[in-house]
Amino acid sequence: MRSQRIVKRRDYDVIIVGAGPVGGYLARKFREENFDVLILEEHDQIGRPFQCAGLVNPKSMERVDAYETVLTPIWGARMHSPSGISVLIGSPDEVRTWSVCRKLFDETVVKQALEAGADILLSSRPVSAEVKHDGVELLVSVKGEELPFSCKLLCGADGAHSWVRRTFRLGRIKEMMIGFQIEVTGYPGIEGRLDMYTGEEVSPGFFAWAIPSGDTTRIGTWTLPDRLGGRSCEDLLIRLQNHPLWKDRFADCREVGRFCGPIPAGMIQRPLAERIAVFGDAAGQCKPTTGGGIGKGFEAVDRLVPALADSIRMDDLSADRMYHLTRLLEPMRKEQARSKALRDAFLTESSDEELDEMFKIWARPDVTALIDELGDIENPIPLGLKMLKDIPEFRRLTAKAAKALIWG
Image 1 (cartoon, rainbow, N blue to C red):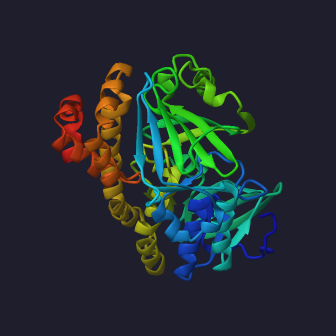
Image 2: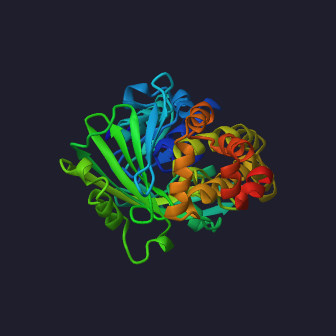
Image 3: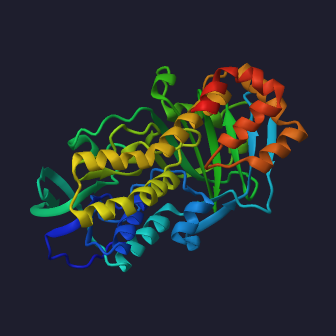
């Protein structure tokens, strides 16, 4: 998507920085509220650079009806312990997530906003912004030319290193992981199943993945920077490819692309301020269990836009009003904290030996059946609570997380 309608006006109800899927969805939702919307995108095309595993959960897909962008429906997984214990989960009867072409997905979501009446400026970025009593005044660089714009509400959907968040000092991301991914041909995966690899050697405290994506496979790993111990995520991926247990799977792989980027999974304290709002990665809304950000970004949009729309109509986007609206995100904040506790207990704070013991339990037919019944990529908490309640071995292994999981 390189073409754009000629933008002649300079004053909008809402200006959104960032034309990723969250920015596009946000623009569409504000257009549905009958506001004038402008999207600013610093790149000259939508969907680049690509910094995501390309998974979209079913609920998010329903929100945007972008099924034409699907490369592979994912219904299951092969999970591998550090010593090679494998657990198969999932059934072809139920799609758990969709592997999509992210460029086409992003373009589709942004196109929906444009078809709803939003404007867009590519190769554009804000240079400065100042909140006034009646709006926000911006200076925007458009293909090298600086132009003035104004709006009633300025939104940032501009990623982990958000300009909007930093400019208005909305706070720091509480937990920032880093990920590295390559796209390859020749990986002998199982259609419809992704692979997950665990262990200190390949993804300390987290997991590596191999995700079917049509004719290729996306292979990557992620972790916290302080868990790298002088290594890079690329080093970890090389270790995975040369691991004695798994190297045969990677023998015929040929790299066709590579991507690296941050994964912000700790919500900031102030996603809203006077006439300012940030969404998605910019607000640290990624899932701490998988790193996925699209679904939670969409959820934040749905939670906030109706109330923000009312505030625009009332011309009340004051600091007090925005502080009050922040409470609408409290369920997301609590869920994120509980999901992190679950991840830490079952994965991040477990040694390789402890992970192997857990995999032995997961491999039991009764436990696998429980995972198939309650497992949800978007919301792992019900499964975690059920395991703590019904499986004594897990209760002992994860006693340190029980309080956080139960009480948030």
